[in-house]
Image 1 (cartoon, rainbow, N blue to C red):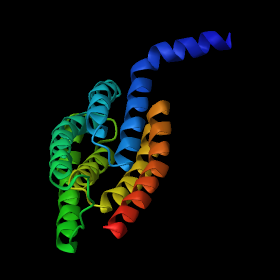
Image 2: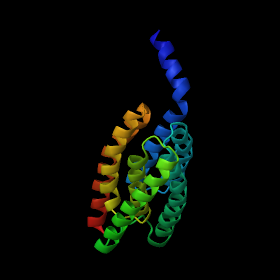
Image 3: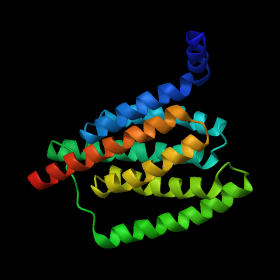
Image 4: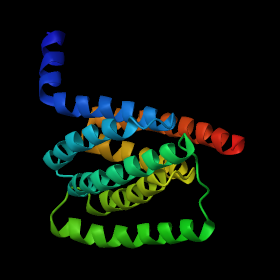
Length: 196
């Protein structure tokens, strides 16, 4: 009986599970500053685009479209750094740039929340805030700023609650696993910055 329940669950959620596994692998590779992280993350992005759309989390589905662009940029930017410097080097984030990005994240939250509400999204404003600040964190990650890990920790913790609420259990577990991965990335990137 339990095997039947497990089989049914796997059959119903196989796409989400594959997305979770590829996303976790991609983030772990990112903490190691390995270029292969970008194509792995790209695979998970396309999978999650479908998963979120099916769940009615339209801001999250739209976020995946933006992630495609940021991922291609990040891949190119990191590759260029490896070609020129021999490795992916962490870059400091200036306070004015940080403040600007955080304000843009807030503005994006309101705009996206209003749009998501009109589209009858499941959690329009929460989803929009998370989307907006995920874009900021993704941009910082592509630009090799340590601050991306701090923002990812905050965003991922809130995402866990959202996904539990929407019964996306594998995704909630994935985002719970992202928190210690982000802490690992923060530690490793700080060490690299101190060594440079």
